[in-house]
Length: 610
Image 1 (cartoon, one colour):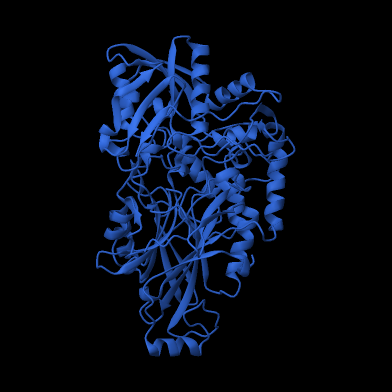
Image 2: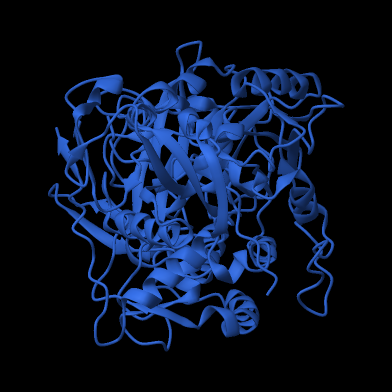
């Protein structure tokens, strides 16, 4: 059971006015190697499109359709920094290595190369294309990312939870176009919106009880029809600010997909792909891990498994996301037949290439011949010139704000681990800010899902190694949360720590990052709330007094009970402070210089027993 919180937890977004085929690394994932009937193979081969990617111009019975997919881009137009820009790859001898990956200049090249020779090719995504974005996109309310996706020839995507960070009205603007309602137009051209449909089958307007966007979309070419149904996780309201989901209802994923699968069937569309912004946890972090060993889907766990097992067999494949993991698995459908379930990690580091063999006679997919593989978006291919121009255009606009130095570090400060060095640094920054507002502030808590990237020592531009720029800080904390102060009893604080590993967080713990002075033991050999060893909790060396009052700093999302911490919503005497990024900036500026940079914290406040 993972102790580290997954990187999909969400808050409100920050708002600011101001291949080559031979070079592609693949993982083979396929359904049982069952061949098409001999007659079907002969028919297909006569027309030049057997079990590979159909290249022929005839219309035999079987036609291969190439489905390219990715998920959780989060506005990462430039190559992500540090570990966020690498994937782990299993080698033939069982060892692993890391590969630098990501960046839309490279993603475009890889996708365009993959499409060559495939007349029947469709590109789909699994949500969170925007939100929690680096400054290059986030500063402009993700208009740059929508422009990039248009140029990538994305055909369709589901919504994810981050598409609601700024509410349904802003999502509608991203779909339909128009300048920002308060900040206006960023360039001399009106923002035209997405060329592709956002699908939101399970997101209803509370008043009309109808989906706020299209529930499904049908791709058609020369008589071939494939329907796409898009949903986000039902629990989106739990991980997005209340303002972002106001007036919306989020329905069950399985019930919604099954409902619209029937509707598509009634319309004569029998080949169906579900785009689901919910995912799983593979047993390995390597993208080419075989999660069908020893049996179909045995190597993946998490919410997507139950969802996949209950979605109607009328759906032929599932493109998933949300957990930022990579997998290509076959999970049995309710009829017990294997069905492809894929996810391409996050940040544009991978894309999935799936072959769906379409039967023109039945209008359905021959499921036994579905093949799929994840491919690395390597950076050893030529950059797509149109994407370079797009990045340069928006980068020029962002540079006066983003290039400003705010601090210095002596080495990479990672966000990885149950307790991370960067998590400790941010918690310390919020404690320092809290004490500047109220000297009685005792501690600070930070949710790990709000930490979107590491701080890297290597220069990202011309600023020099070890210099932290405003843009880099923005990438770490891109949400417009405030740092709030509240009073809690010692008993409430113990309950908060237990909520990290119980209730909605039991299956995938969300371990809060804690400020200096707070220590405790996390015993992962136990279950539920017992994993927090209550009598080990100390603040500045002393046990918490259950009846005493403690002043706690946390971001506004946590203070409102977000990420499954209802007790944090029960605090008293709230003081709403400044922006959380401003708190981090102030801390870095006050505590570092070129001659005396900040060293990575030791991340030794939580003792983990495994």
